Image (cartoon, rainbow, N blue to C red):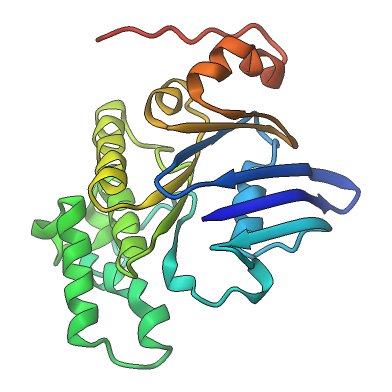
Length: 244
């Protein structure tokens, strides 16, 4: 689904990614964790072709990202932006805007586009709020709307950058439940950047520990056993599992 091979990227003289290599297989839920400034968001932007690496190769569905054109297969939810309560767009309008890549710039949305948007809202469980202004919703609901917007294009691969920032604990539980359903029932492969080690180590199938270079890539259980977390954060770290 996605591959980075010996990828480097620098902001001026500062190296943000250093020889990063990893593969994302179909059906994965890949969690990317690391300290501030470790290159997590840069990694997503390189995968999306928004940043050009100084060395290495980036491929989506086996195609070099510079030549990739099937962007409807990829969804992206950036770090959350706050919506003013007066922001005029309704939820349904925000969601259907995710079909712009398929409909084409300046073209009217078709019945198929409207159906895809309706289905995306149904998947995230916010059909009843379709006519509400997005600025009137809670942080958790706004984040769900942004996911629905990404889902409207029918992506096979969904990238999410810090999707639970500013979302309370109960809403986070619901949010991760939604991600599991997208993965298991809708067949969407996920790449999730997060600071939340506890949630991520419980929810993902594969874990990438990034601190400019790739410290670890494998199962969450193996990351805990191997001491990769302590190496990445340069401190003693514990992950305590319980059945609560």
